[in-house]
Length: 351
Image 1 (cartoon, rainbow, N blue to C red):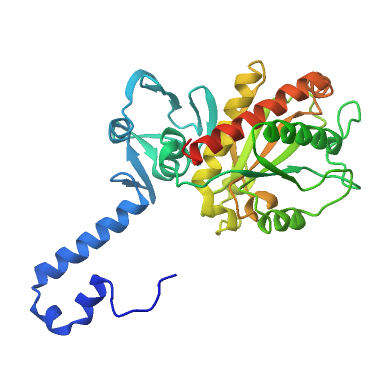
Image 2 (cartoon, rainbow, N blue to C red; image 1 turned 60 degrees about the horizontal axis):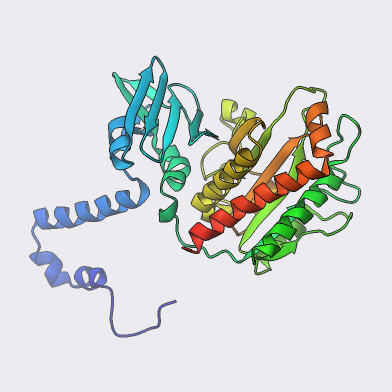
């Protein structure tokens, strides 16, 4: 908050002085306004954009130049962009891409327009940039972590192929994540430490009223009666105005796309989700990478902290359920989650 005083911002001095305004030529006033609007645009986009059917896109050539990438391969619809430390795979007309081997779901697909490839501007800003330029994400020191074991009490969550209960394994995984983080010097909090019900609202309020710096929600998945679906996916909050990954509302163009408390941390959310998904896949390379996705789950949209929700495999898949039932597997998985959190904290704390 600024204290009251005699000084005013220069822009206010200029425009509150009528004589000065009258003395400016029309060209000078236009120049000032153009500069202001240009600066305002620069805050909202990294590039000059192209409008196609009402949406903003970035030229591939501008994108590769900015991120110091080269087009290593282009075959039909598939593109590979690379540098010494980065490799990005894109497919024209597909929302699926990978960055350094980790699957990311875009809001919109790259397109071929007038023999030039265009990338959705909103995805460049909200999805790709936080990953490729992690050091540019606004500093947010991380010393305390709220861990949220999903479900509990009468809310058992999903039931597995062998009738295993999600709430039990979510708590077990959360406790293991906490143990590792404590060893690394983090302060930890838990939304629940035993088998009792806590509402979604209370989970968010608990976090917002605490000194937790980030929020990590632990869940397990189900596609019942489908027993084939498998893999791990990490969710972060959908940005304002966009539809969530895979939502039927995306296809229908309906839904509430307004701002949520968690949207304050869009870039942090994406980076945290990516680093945790990357850490899990590194520790468990045989696991199916279902990718980093967007959703408006209550606990990540109402929580005023960088937040993610991890679906740690399918209890509806007999083989994956058997893995999750293994204490050694859960230990490895929890350690990987915590390692991803640690890496995020290291970037945020500028260690």
